[in-house]
Image (cartoon, rainbow, N blue to C red; front, side, top):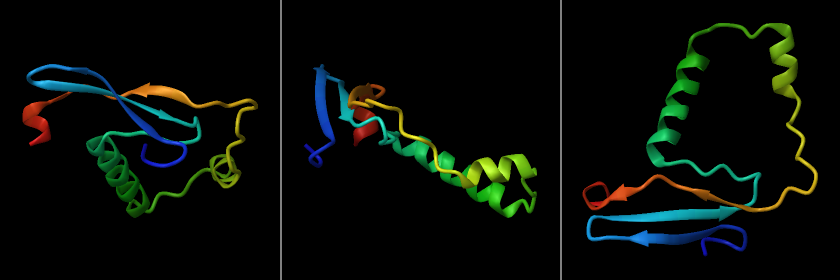
Length: 87
């Protein structure tokens, strides 16, 4: 358990890899580190580009996304990580 809402589950092990799953509420984003880093870099580059959003997109961005009714936690598989990647 990482917190009261987030749990890491080992689903399979072998000599060279471990497969895990993450159980978390739907409102939590679960991303691998390199995916998160790519998103941060893309957002930074977009912010520095100086381009303005069209009025429709700017208004949509200002409104928070609605939570789906009855959203429950789900197991979200994470890609396999080999022993060489974890070292």
